[in-house]
Image (cartoon, rainbow, N blue to C red; front, side, top):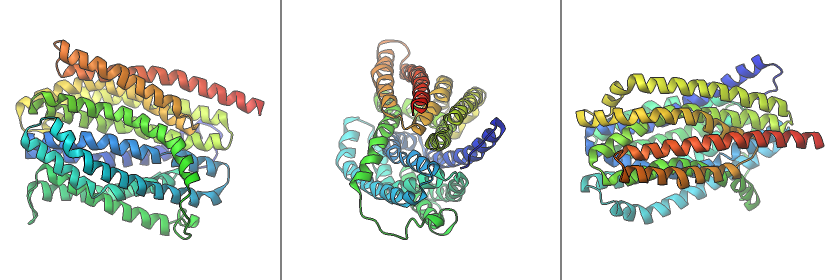
Length: 453
């Protein structure tokens, strides 16, 4: 990262930071995308099983990894304030915390996965696939969370091209193991959708080892000597990370878990509906990586400028990011509308399921427009270390407004399963409006504090 003086320079730096993040996010989500798509080619039961398993896993992963995302503004502001000697300590505490979170996830999963799946009263084959898919994923939890902490360090330096390179290296490995484990090729057992979980776990270990190499041996990361000095666990630093990270994690959890809750509620419908819903969510979520990448970028650049007390520059980056995000959200909606039929064929060979996917995709267009506003604002606010109010907004918008609205429409009107999607759209729209107001207040408050200081 470096200071910029003109809008042209800001656009250039923003795109330099953002494009690798976008490629990285698309690459990371592509693993889930290929899990779902390739499982669907194995059969509707495999697609539904992976859908249920993924719906249980994604909110947990995104929520807890959101806690670790606190490292990005912490390190960005540290670097912006020219206190580089404090960076290694923060990174290592993030790694220690990631190990702790991994252990919590694995223990919790061992206790609750079976009861949750049993409660859903799924088809026996679907339940079996979902359970063993999650067991396979479990072997990759530890490396995934450690890598997330190290990635925050890499991105905080503005070296987002490195995480892009790591992801692009790992993606074909994931596709390869999906192919051989789902379909039983090259002497491997044919595991169907279950194989996608084990393929992802192998890929997460590969990503971790490559990331450790870069952090240890490649400049500018090696200059910080992250692994050269052992430090003890610092509960005070954990408290700082958690104080900032827990609201971030819960905000992300409330947003992603609402989709998981809808998938679980849809277990009352037939297998075709579950499969179609998850396929449509999977593709829409793939496009969601665009505003999410904007959010990550804005956290970095805004956090850097706020740390250096250049509030005018921070506000300029905010406006720039919002304009780009909204434009790309409109493009994403057009893509969904035009390509909904060929997209449906990527996920299934069943004509009835394909028609349902196309219908769900029409509703997902409205997701893109709301996400193009709400998600980048969340990234901006994290750059200011403002996380508690957005957390409350997320809870109210998604769980007190969106989910009840969807439940009523799905169960007491003729909308059926599509009612849940209308509820999701409602929650996202409310969140977007509330976050716009919050951003205006935070920027005004920061400017006043600067003048008083």
